[in-house]
Image (cartoon, rainbow, N blue to C red; front, side, top):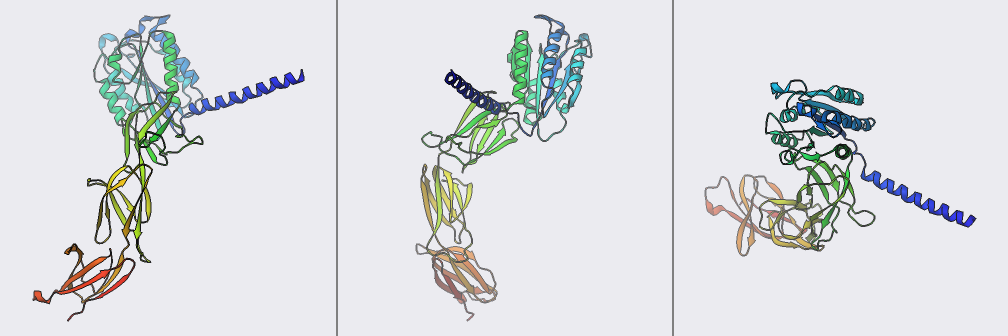
Length: 466
């Protein structure tokens, strides 16, 4: 009997551990967005049509009850503020007042009871200026650098005054004033009209209404999960350690910055982000990889994939280096493109998307290396001749030009200064200095000094005034 009791206790203990782990996973998936204040503005239709009978009571009475219940559940939420704007409640319908919209309860902390009292007192009267209500809502949100501004519009009809509500909504989203609004349509088939304004939900009974409003609030309050798979050339998620910037698709404002990581299971790590926003993700590969208009489903795990096949380029010197050599940069460009995508120093390693690249080594003279190929998970090593140093002494006020020999032709490198002493760092090769006194009136007095530069060596050049 004791043995059976021990077995039962062991099973219960295991069940408790699994239960705790499941709760922890759920808590992680429903982790409230951190360090951000969420502000929900309820915009409530109180036009004359809200007096209409629907289900167990009038539409306004049912709305008042359901919204009050939701407000009760939000009393003790951290980093949350609520406000209430109402339209169609101050003028009679016959007046067709298209400016009958008012912020009745502004955002503040612990205003649940005030909100519910105001809801109870509302009496439907007038028309439905939805567009003007959205337009006015911009000033309902006090300035805040780290706030999520959310609108929940509850209505039983269309705008009586304007047809530009979608344009107003788009403008507010583009400037970052609000996140895409939520719209609850009470028992009407207006999806085609409202889908361009926000996320439209049609409810046909009280149960649907209550469930939809609660789901919207939960989406507004909690983050959801996603992972970004960085795919190699074989469509496997093997790439990692790359920064990723998440931008709002509408406003183009940056929302999150991460460095991609694999978790302990070797999978792309799970991220918790706001599901109410569509994102453009800029993956900081070289060159950048961009995926646009990514939407997440609240409460679900979304896998986002991006093609980022990469290989490695190593730049290093060939030959003996100067002891005091300063880092030399190399301009990296996509093959046959003019714009550079990176400056990589010699004696460094960098990852690039697979493909062909053109390199311009910022030595004197410039060195161009074209059609350098980067292959998947391979290392391409480029050896660049180490430079040498040339110390030039010449008479003051001489006109001097430095040339390099290239296939039996002399090519321009640089015009030298008129100082007596000058030191240059040059690629190895055959050079000549062509010089003449500024005061000379005879071309034949031009002097030519040829010399050779070796990697890591110091060459001393003396041009005499004879």
